[in-house]
Image 1 (cartoon, rainbow, N blue to C red):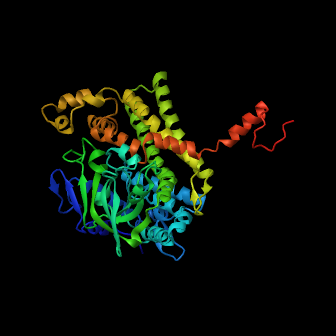
Image 2: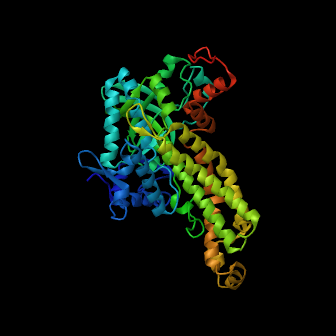
Image 3: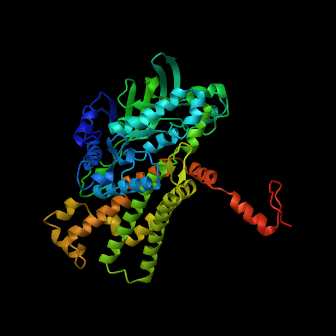
Length: 488
């Protein structure tokens, strides 16, 4: 059976990878305090697939009988898309929190590249063969696969004029073994993943075509490759007590600056190379599948907003107030707006150029924009409902101090709510809304798939505007130059 266990996952990370964090070179990443919590979460996800309770939801069978993760089997029917949603929801239910970079969303980028195989075959048939191989390999070997998209931001005016690629990752030479690349990328979870699909994020491929060619490459890179260095930001959950920060201490997904210092990429791992057309195409279609899993996470975040708000107003007896009900209603509208987009995207799913079943692109991208655009205001609304104690409640150690506990018992007891449970609710709400982790999540979500303007361009490009044009032509009696309809 292809499925990996949590133990096998932990052991697989001991591959000599070079990881740096807080001025330290990490020796054992699976036991390092900054990485252990999230590695434990990922290991739990691997182990879930072996449990009878989850087996049918989290796994599926390939045509040859091999059992693989449901998340890694490319969707061919609407039922497959529904099953992927159930997979994500079952995992998040078990974990009790939201994690983004865990593999099920990033494999979708490979499926997008699969849809480009005809274009790639025109350049080099071996590239399409490589794509199929790696999609199959991720499923059969249960590989923790992430994405490496974001570039360190240098002087992009030079790049757009074709003068200089700066720090952007590019090919420096080729040999009989593969291509050698140099540059940098940012990626969440790279330090504890197996491999990444590395690709360019440039939007304008027209300037200086020949000079741009070395930057137009996409490939699979093993995260333990010689010459690859992981420079990680400080964990927002490290040195925190889980009782005080229940989300940050468990679900902190570490971001990494990946330095490619003349890293060899074998030819069998090259997915396109010196192809401006391929680079432009993959950027325009990159999230046609992954945005579905991503937006599912936003739906779960909306559920947490509603739950935190409801429990707080219920414990203080404010649910009878019309103003409170109106605010809760706004949170429900937000949640159901996301849910409606996701549900409709499956109901109106489309056949992709490669023959897969992809969520309806217009509904999916508008759902993603809706979820991201309104989250900050919905979080603020939740703060209003939770109240000022979100910001002023002492930590658990202080609350438990024998000398002051009688005061805590007096002033933090409300109805049937004990001071302990009320504190737990406030700590959860704080980590969801007010902590450094909460702020990081909001920024991460805004840019993790693409910046806001690019998300809007995806909406613009995937909405069929012709029916609206035709409605106005007919209603106004306009005879379009391209119309064959006789309005007389």
